[in-house]
Amino acid sequence: MIDLMKQSPLGTYVEHLKKGELAYQVNKDNNKAFFYPRAIAPETGSANIEWRVSKGLGTVYTTTVIYYKGEAPLNVAMIDMDEGYRLMSRVEDIDAMDVKIGMRVKFKVHPGDDKTLPYPVFTPAGDAK
Amino acid sequence: MSGLERGSIAVVGAAESDLGQVAQHTSPVDLMAQATMRALDDCGLKLKDVDALFVAATQVRMGPMSLAEYLRIKPKVFDGTQIGGSSFMTHVAHAQMAIQLGLCEVAVIAYGSTQRSVSRAAASPREINPYESPYRPILPISAYAMAAARHMHQYGTKREHLAEVAVAARKWALLNPKAWEKEPLSIEQALNARMVSYPFTVRDCCLVVDGGGAIVLTSAARAKTLRKKPVYVLGVGETLSHANISSLPDFTVTGASVSGPQAFKMAGVTPKDVKMASLYDAFTINPILFLEDLGFCPKGEGGRFVANGAIAPGGKLAVNTSGGGLSYCHPGMYGLLVMIEAIRQVRGECGERQVKGCDVALAHGNGGVLSSQCTVIFGSENAL
Image (cartoon, rainbow over all chains, first blue to last red; front, side, top):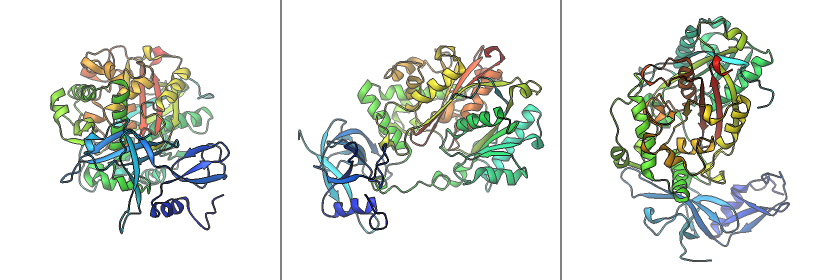
């Protein structure tokens, strides 16, 4: 049960990121992982939700490279996490055009700044299983 | 949709507003009103005949109220369903419900946008999503680009196939006096244009122009008494699958695979019967996905289907004969203009770009980031 009078789904998610953790939720009624964080589980409407900390490994489902004028090419990708959910993110420490579908990637925290909350980014993980 | 009867209503009037770049300070509602009166003039009905109003727009939050106030009419039925560019196909389905139930007789569906004049950022401000906005995707472009990238990976679709869609649209546009683009486009030019969000160059992306439109619908019985040949609504289908592209399970399969079969079933026709397909081409990947999902070719074959000018003038299937959102007009939510071209093809009003014997035309709308998919199949009296 998530008590919205005390803590929002995004609030809990960000608290985990501040500790260097990527958190996600599981619907305990059907054992399905889901993302983004919610107060009510999708499909069943259950409030029986558990927070878990991801192992941080995933695979690039698809990717694009954005060309903002006057900036280095910027990667945006969809990451399918090993625990069975998907999130939008960015793969860093590699040329944006070298991010490939099927590439294994590992989570790290981007600390955010005055305007932006911390958020997850990824780096290449080689052949990590 | 069960309960809706094939051919129970018809489009009797259809018109664009002024398109392109309108005068400074023109409002989206000015364009809606202009298009509404042109569409009514098209069929000979008067403003006082209108008793139902359907409006959606990005710059006018409560569309039915704004247009009703502007025109000083008091519609009995109104609907502002806002699901992006396919809203107007959904409005057709909802108008059909209301007309069949006898709740109203004459429905107007209208749209207007001044996104070129005021800028896209001002016309369609993005909602903040704390889980996605930090990555700075250019939405909606990057969402469709990621669908294209996945399709290329999974099915061997090439950037040249995407370029084929842009070039076909341009060839059709050169046959349409109202089209924004006036110069030819080659595959090489499309491929070498400025990259925006890989694999999309600026030529893979729709235009950003001002414009609007309106259509008038009434019962089949009343339609027969009016000026133009009725264009019957044979079938409609609609579905929502997600809001953010991350929640679409398979980026290569859209809700058109749901809305299409619904519309075909109601219409009692198959893709082989469709003489012209008006497929919302916000980006070049869209017609490829929709040709597959609507059943014009097998899943994964869309890129190869459009190759060698197959959807250009003289090709095997007439697609987006207006020149589409890529080369004719894209005023933000383009779905109403997608239908207007299909309606005109069924009427036989398309001049140089007219498809011969176009008794059945399909209009497919897309909204958000492949999020809402709505299909309307139109037919002439011969198709009833």
